[in-house]
Length: 164
Image (tube, rainbow, N blue to C red; front, side, top):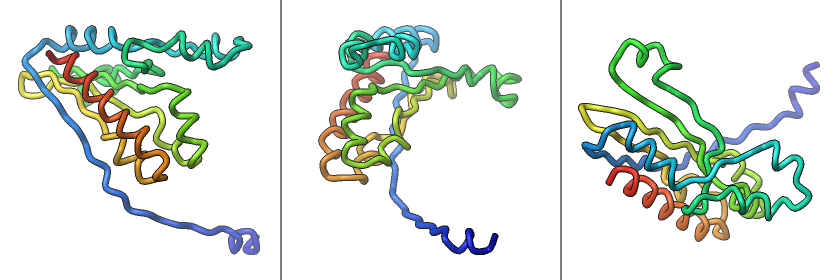
C-alpha cells in the first residue's frame, strides 16, 4: 500500500481571483427576473438526445450568448439565511461551447466552468457578485485570455442590465 502512496504527487498554485460585486436599490425579485431574461436555459436531456451538439447548444443561448446551467436557492438552503431576511440565489452561468474551446487549451478550464453568480440582498440593496472570469480562466493559458476577457464583459453587462 505504501508503494501506491509514493506514486502520488501534489502541486499547489496561488492565483489571485478578483471578486466583482454590483448593487442597486432595485428589488431582488425584479433583479432575478431581469437577470434571467438575458440568459438561455441549459437542457441536459436535449443535449444527450441531440445528433447536432453545436446547433443544440446554440439554440439554448440567451441574448447574452450564455445560459443558466443550474440554480440554487441559497436563501432556503443555508440555515443562517433561512432565519434572516436575506434573499440569495446562486447560478451556474456559462456556455458549453465556450467552455469546450477553453478546455482545448487547458483541461483545467473545466474546473472553473461554469462560473458562479450570486444574487443576494445586503443592507437594503440587491447585489450581484461573481469571480472575474479573466482572473480564474485567464491564468490557465494565453490562448484562453481573450475568451476570458470576453466573458468579463458579458458578465458585467449581465449584472448592470439586471440591476438597472
